[in-house]
Image 1 (tube, rainbow, N blue to C red):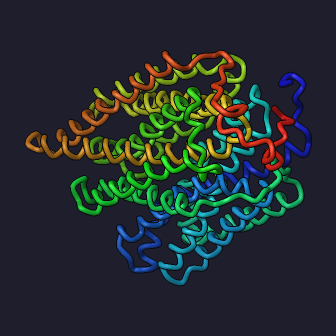
Image 2 (image 1 turned 30 degrees about the horizontal axis):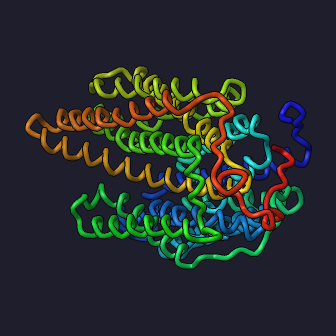
Length: 491
């Protein structure tokens, strides 16, 4: 029973270990950006070349996330966590000592292999560790850590680069990662017993090619445009591969990625809503700095500082929203979250170059409150509708689709901004950019309203669980295989 649940000392230490790993992984996704000018100077490369340090990290993560469900079946969670942290630490060390730019890129690839496994693995472990009635608070804590990393990362990276050079930002992470590995070896609690699983190599190939192509295409749109042959070919190849891969899973007795989880209405709706929010989050992160610097005339440093309050608010509200989920349920959170995002978006539709900085911070922070009320709580609500047996697959699906939605949303709304700005150039460069900014945020309101409607219709506070044909719940494995799965002692 949830009311009898107590977090043991060993579980608490396990939670600390996985939180440290999650924080390091989230930190590394943003920490390199302020150091790019220094890296460009060191290796004599172009800005376009340097941008691959961020791009390749996200692309490799996108490939690794779907594979994690299979890896969790084959390895104990303790061993897999240690393997992912070793990959992460090794990649960080390689980046720190890199004598050439290609070695630095290789280090980022190895880093992102570890991160791509780590993020869905930790989410799955947290869901297994806590009963359904306590998962909101636990997931909110993870949300706090993930939300804090983008705040700490760029500021810490810029300061360390100025003080000791760009290599120091990687060198500082290594001892923390090593300590976390040692703590995991001694204290991390296993959630599963590994079993031999069949890897469908064609599904792996289709997943890798499909998601890489889609993420690469959407990530290249802002530079190459939608009509570029590379973008078109990658988009078509990616979509075809993913569709074929999803259809193939229905024919396999042991699917590479159990897409039957999407038959659970709460999980499907929770995933769709998280995709909407992620798209809104990422595209605003691109366009708002452009507005602040190119239109309002703020410096890059001032632009970054203006966005800090929203990041702080989102990080602080994640555990609060988790506790509200545990006590009150998801419906009120979801509706209030989309209402906050709609109000914040309306401000950016009508703002001007003279809009007061305090108002910009307030409205950006209001959007952040909305994101905190929706992203983690409704993802957790969706996961709670599934059996523990398929949580690894569900986490992989949710994370992958969310990342694709973020890339697609950014590509679409940045394109809307660019086209609208170009069409209004007769008004002058400032007014044209302001027009493009307004049109992009107006277009995004379609997403906000769709999300609110979905919340009102489908999100309820009852303990609804969608039963699927042929098993105890979504994608339940045969009884003979259940020795490989969590015993359910916490749920």
